[in-house]
Length: 184
Image 1 (spheres, rainbow, N blue to C red):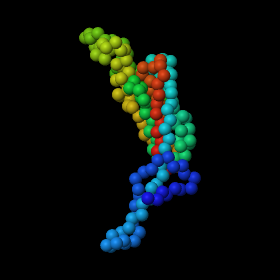
Image 2: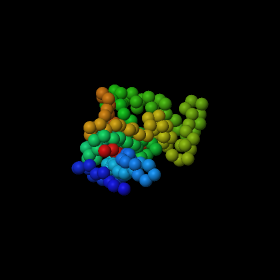
Image 3: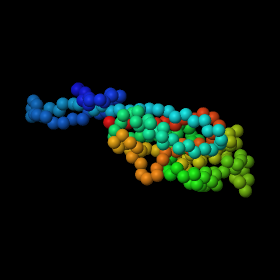
Image 4: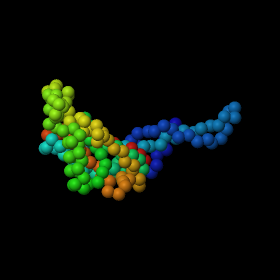
């Protein structure tokens, strides 16, 4: 097996062989030289310590910096929350919209629903275990775990106004998000 290394490329990992037909071999079968293309990748963790229970952080600049460091020209960038009470999502960085999200999520899954069932506010079964963050789990489920953005010509391939956010629904302790970039 031969490795096809392009000038200026860092070999980080290998992808399955790419084959092409060259000339007939014994028995009329085509000989197929194998070339392994080199794929670049980068893994980076972003750490957060949101001082309040809920918070929304624009992490687009940090993700762009990671893309630049990866030296990937064409590929994919995954960003995901590494905790089950946080989310990563894409939207506009407009303060009114962020407030609307927070208000809407709090109506869907209010923090103060408590652990004691009642006809007026219900109650979270999860909170009966001694936890107080059932609402954060539900908010994360609505907002999602991750985003994937195409990388084209070394840049995040966004639509107009798109930004990447880390949303925290159960803060006051250190948490992290993962950036994983793959491509060529």
